[in-house]
Length: 429
Image 1 (tube, rainbow, N blue to C red):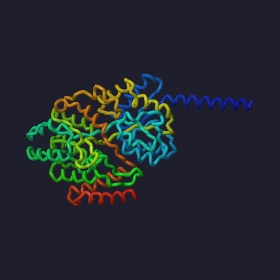
Image 2 (image 1 turned 180 degrees about the vertical axis):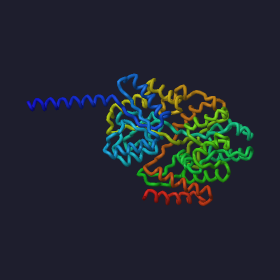
Image 3 (image 1 turned 135 degrees about the vertical axis):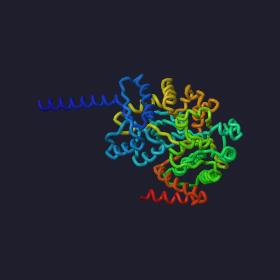
Image 4 (image 1 turned 90 degrees about the horizontal axis):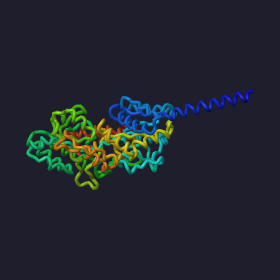
């Protein structure tokens, strides 16, 4: 009797566990942070997936910001993996830190059959470790130089002459002409952020770190980029501001004739309807005299990752492959939908044929098809190595660049020496 009872209880426990596992297998939990951008995009992906998998619930959990997601992920990992979601969205500049600090925590999606040749190469770089590739790329931060066509005309210039690949020397000459004629600096510029310099360096294929994460300032692009920014600043081509809000006000209010930014700034520019027809975008200028320099760079972006310990790892991988990495017509139309619905430009190259990618935009000068242009530039962006110390280096060099603008430092080498000292102090604490 005891053996029969024990066998019954064992069977009941097994069946109960199997039922629970079966129930869990019908749920894929996703963590992200913006209900109107990445949250919206993932919910649209769920609608596509549910057409063929109506019994699977994609539970999209939205956090206040990307740091909150990362903190929650790290807390779960430190607790042995308990409480992890199936999928989490991670900023591109954060993923190498996660991989370094928590080896083996992410599922290898290359081994699961994802074809990464169909994604923008600069997105794949940060998620690659040896022969493993961990994520599914999401949005691009493909950059361009935004210019006020009406200001160029007021300066006696033909805007069409500048709708081409430019060098930064070309931009300086343009800025000097505009400043002389209409007393407007050409580019709104945040003096507290190193992103402008970083975009320049990335466009030339430059790196700040070696593959092992150690700082390496030998890249041929770094010193010319710092010298170029200083030249622009001294020539009055840049309109200096401090902080995001002041920077946005500078270009939206017309204090500057342009800005350098990524495709996602379009929504902010369009928030001023009185500027319709005035803006145009040209490719990211390239550094002169630097071998391999391109007219393409990147600012921002994030990607989706599946955890090795995910409650429904197999289901999560199938969901991502079937929507974010598929040439199925419904999947391609999904990319088209999120571009229009949230301004979310994906990095899956086959998706660029969508009508919203190729459409002309009446807000821009001569109805420029801006999304088509950004999508084209996206494919040429060089890879940037972030490593675990990217933020520490960014804070250090931002402070040193501020000293350069104030005249406290004089040369690119002065900036790099000063920044290196602060950087080493910060990572040793």
